[in-house]
Length: 170
Image (cartoon, rainbow, N blue to C red; front, side):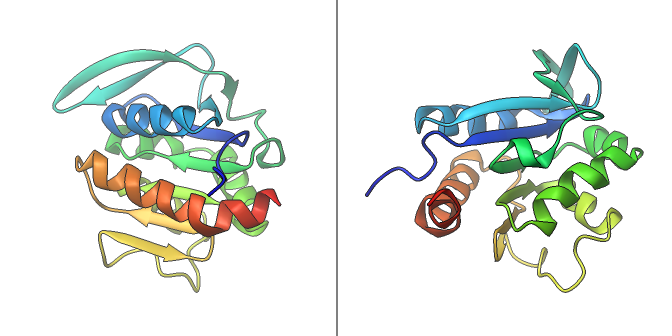
């Protein structure tokens, strides 16, 4: 089977306090499959991850949220992290950016606490986004697998390689 993720431009939306374990695991998995992963940060410069109960590493933002456009990417990933999600909910740019993916039926992987961004942006109306460890509603996959990173990565990659991303890239 051809790798449907290869060559895709993937936006990873984060703010300070994002779940570093989720972000880095997905970033590695997508890059290993040939995707171009870009970090879209709420602010320019460095964004600080959160690991366990402490601050993690800093990551450079490739683009800032206030100038990023969904049209420039093929797939959106939003890792969990309470601090990150609370900050992202405070700006209309988040609703615009995430909404750009949802409204044009582009694939999205929304993890753990980040699911709140769909509800906060009125993007969850008529969609199944919670209730099981992994929910798939069209091109939106939401996971609540927490630190079970291997299962989360497998679920996201299986979904996008098996159907939605392949159809989108064709």
